Image (cartoon, rainbow, N blue to C red; front, side):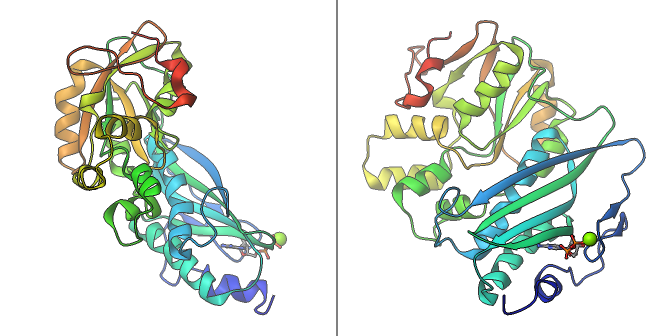
Length: 324
Ligand code: ADP
Ligand code: MG
């Protein structure tokens, strides 16, 4: 490599500003030393993005940096955790200073937004691949899990669904709002921390609502009935579908049900908590929508307003459509 590994770390991955008080030692020693606050649990997750698999090779480097951290922060959000620290393992085919500069900006700008400090990592040469580990904390006993839902709980989602999926499908330009949703996802950190007080179970929507809700239901052997007309769709989503003149019924339902990459939260809320959830998320502010209810019968059933069953044209999930 042209610049040495140490030079790259110093130039691009050593935060300029003084960091968090709970970082005893960060980048530069053999390992980071971090202070977990008393009466808290440490929450840790890791995700890898591989070029050509998780993002097209020509993706803007800032978007790759942003997304590599965002997908991990979204996992922390789903546990109800407050993010604190991150480590980054970067494998690059060559030393491209322009690429490194933009990648690190994308990463560090998002980190700063959520007061996350990069405290260590690794650099290797090879096919482009990025692994991030994120660390957060929750007050002891308050983390939320995929398991824990009860029949009768409301199924709720934050924000809007299907935006990233429509951006991918429609090949929208980089500056369009839906495309930004795909390239620069916003992890629902504040919403996750608010929902942990009320949710019986929680997961983030990375693979698509049916897939991720399915994981949550499998954890308890339960099912859900989903009202497809209640699925929250953004103004941009509706506008782009309208302009494309495509069969809106199928796409307007199937993208929010099946497409991934939105990084919203899906949670189960005992009915008595619904007013508090609405008030709490309104103060963030973050939209939250009830889209269905947990059932004892396993499987996910989808329904229209008039009560007729709706079968999504998403082959991967057809085995889920028989429930009630
Ligand atoms: P060692 O050889 O002891 O494992 P390295 O030379 O790999 O140490 O790393 C030196 C320091 O730089 C360590 O503190 C490590 O965590 C940090 N570091 C290495 N790569 C990165 C990176 N991509 N981002 C942030 N910190 C990094
Ligand atoms: Mg060492």
